[in-house]
Length: 189
Image (cartoon, rainbow, N blue to C red):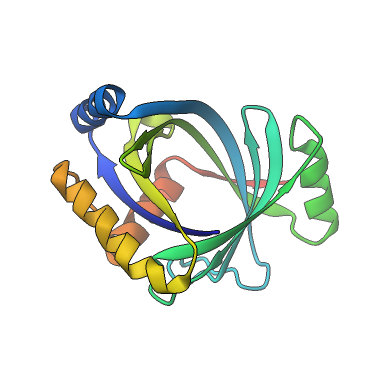
């Protein structure tokens, strides 16, 4: 599957407004609490998230653990291919030990609380990192790379119709840097 996604920052009022709208007009799918560890320095990794070809994370979502790889699927960062390797463990301790033994002793730790809704064929995630920062992700899957730009444009139109900010590449890079500085934490395994 190719994931086509847009994001935008929200203040508390916008977050509450969008949550109310999706609760009334959409379908609530699930609530997740997720702990993630972004692995550093592997082939395809870049500290610049917009230049990163491959993103590898250890993820624990409500006790379901996996190694997730997202690989750039379009030249303009509008889509990524996702591959998940499920783990039997209910925590990430063994996965962290294995990553360390493979030569990846440090990572960026992230915590996120998310409410996921479906509205008119789009998955909307309302994300709340610690410290009361808010953002949304709107996502649809594409079968072919040729569909990516069309789907991306549709997602932008849907967000604009809801009076939501859509982050472009420069704003996205700045927002990720902000989260890395203010919310996320570098850790050693």
